[in-house]
Amino acid sequence: MLSSLETETFVPLVLSQSLLENDLVQRCLAACCLEVATCSTRLPSDFPALLRVFRLAPYHFWRVVESVAWTGDSALWEDVRAEGRLPTCQQVVPPSRLEVNADGNPPGGGAARAPPRGSKPLHLFARKVYSLMGRRLRELCSALRIGDELRLQIWTCLEHALVHCTALMRDRHLDQMMMCSIYIMAKITKKEIPFKDIMKCYKSQPHADKGVCKNVLISGDEDKSQTENHNGGGHSSEFLTPNTPSARYPVPSPQQRSDLIHFYNHDYTAKMRDFATLFVPASGGDTPPPPVPVPPAEAVPAQAPAVRQPPRLRDVADRARDAAAPRRRRPELRLQLHSIRAPA
Image (cartoon, rainbow, N blue to C red):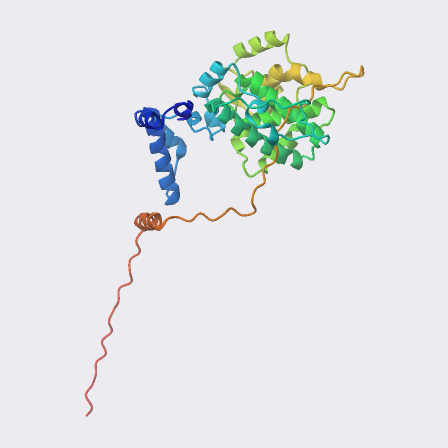
């Protein structure tokens, strides 16, 4: 849908005509209308099933940034390939909305890069991804009692994984990358945080999904060998978790799924080991790479404002609920007749 609105030089009449003749826009509009109708009438709703009925990709709804947008057949990968990579946080978030250090400068040092003109679907999608992950990382680090300095380093690692190792996200979940980034950066900076503690704190979050920790795609042996050749060898024991499941489970086959720790040891460290070593405290005085900016915490109102439905919509909603609700049988009224005796 967003690709149809990308050009800003359309005359309103031409824009309206092009939108009306666009099959994708019509299907997206119909799906949105059905979703609004089912939600407003409090009827059972299954958004993924709705997408399948209308043959729509979740990526067309750029607010959907969870695992359904990162599937292998998603239209997201075509846009990433055309762009060259996923845009960075500084490319899609205005400089005024980036978190700054105590000295008033962005964490990356120097002037923040202004976002490009226009509103490409990939840039809008990346902006929502960074805003969502910035908030989730802040909440999880607070639960784990991780300071701001380490949190910014974790954010730098997470952004590097999304931008330069985007293939790690194929058929996986953003929260999986976040927890792996927390563990590897904590291990690099000598702040030991057991992976089990990270997953335990994650499961206590309101948005947590149990399948994120227990059902993770593991790459096949062919992908593993290519990754090892690219990184100059196998895994280093310095980055593996102490409770690696490789001693108890066989080597995974292509498209096999396992737990998050297995994914970290089998796939994540192979891609991110070289970048993570840049943050190892060196005795020679070398400074690690500066952390990249992170979107600030957004103020959330204590109570969401009440949404008032128009009178006509309220009538339709009431009728729909009455029609869906099972009808109760009214109790039968029994008339009791008392015999009246005439006085003697």
